[in-house]
Image (cartoon, rainbow, N blue to C red; front, side, top):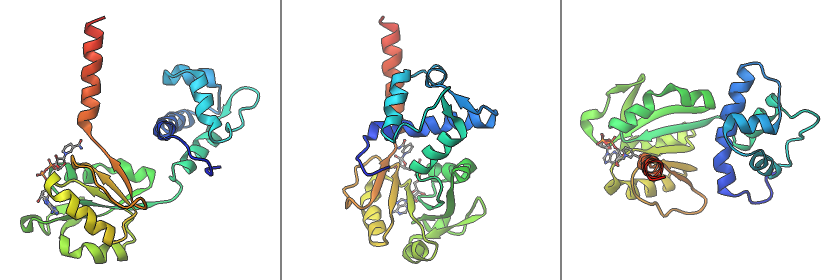
Length: 211
Ligand code: NAI
């Protein structure tokens, strides 16, 4: 199903479909038409059909989609049927906030450890895990089969730490540091910039005030 290249824009919309379908499922809704889903999600029905056609359309038959089936299929496409082991590098404000957010585990992202270069933080307990020195990183990644590293360290340190992670055979980096990482294509990098979202909000405030 995933042989052809799917655009990142479509992939970017899948988590939202997954979330809405999960809520429908939890509320006992068994079927939904693309029209009703479009009203709920405030996107056009044709956008939904086009997005789903990338994956064979998910067999909309008679009245709409089977919610549980669709939720399950999209979860599978997003790779959520398998668990991911993650570590956090940088046990400062952001690293601790992410570590303390338990909900990622519901989606199969299992928090395994947290690292920092500051000796004063070593041994500090965050969600029952002790902050470890960077010297433990390579062996921990190997032993615990870590596939994702969350980078919550300053920009100045991010590139060298990312390179070290590549040497440790990490599969993916969730990068919060405000710097682009030029890593081999085999390493998946997702950059997160909360300020991008705020700037979008600012644009929309401006537009609303000027129309
Ligand atoms: P913080 O200063 O509270 O924490 C940073 C931690 O990284 C410190 O504990 C420090 O000891 C550790 N660290 C520094 N160099 C290291 C290295 N080489 N190896 C391991 N650990 C190292 O900073 P905060 O507020 O938690 O922010 C962390 C990063 O996230 C910053 O780069 C900040 O700009 C960025 N950030 C990004 C956001 C986004 O939306 N992308 C939002 C907020 C912060």
